[in-house]
Length: 340
Image 1: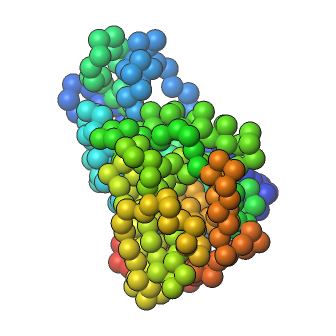
Image 2 (image 1 turned 30 degrees about the horizontal axis):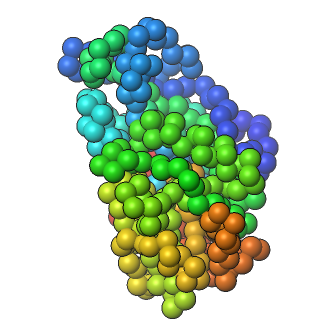
Image 3 (image 1 turned 60 degrees about the vertical axis):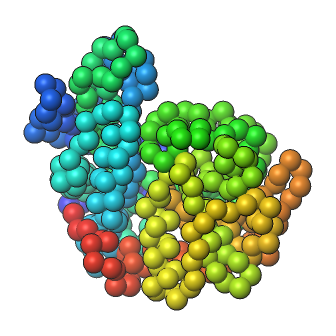
């Protein structure tokens, strides 16, 4: 299939409507067979559950062109599993994992002309999501739901790509103790909007959120998990019940241990020890891993030895290895790379 005429190397991380999307509806206790449609619009009743009580969950994954020309996705089974867990937490009927995998493959195939070419630095972002669709006025779960998946070609999530970021310690909490911080629910991201707009207005790329219980431990940013590297080259990642279980972070932990032979600690990370780390990175589907050069805590600057000019050496190795696996330069663990 001939590719669309797009300036692939200069697109940002934004929405560009593609030709097809996948839709399935849940009614009378069952999901229908699902279809591909050209209609990008959704018509809802004014009292739909999603509009009244924010009953919606979503996922994010990518399709890209590997070095050998195949169109592949990275660990979509984990996205399917995470979406099922998110749905259960919000009392929504889980969309079956095998149906999820079939849906994302179909929507990528239908929009193959929008998958960026190998080496462009861009990818086809896939956004599966579901929401309560029938009228709900009393506070309770909806009875009917819609699952959808659309695609959009995207470039780097952070402007400047691999250039180290400056972030701030937020005065706001991302999640509540025993709340929904560990699922991918739209309501979590709504809570973070004021904080991220404020951070951007102040010249920062992102927020560092501390634990909501004691505000002494590092959690995550609005859209990515943290990875730290100690001065003796150990990889440390925060552990908490209110952190979203990032698929990219889990993959980087495996890469650190099994490809690079590094020691990894998944544990509570006190904010007071951040100043002692050698490197810091933000990891997630959209960014893979972005280096952090500086964290500002109410005027106090924490500057990492890796500096503000380029990725630190260990974070660069992690980035190069994981993207090498994704692009087919390096052999992938079984099941990690799925051909469309």
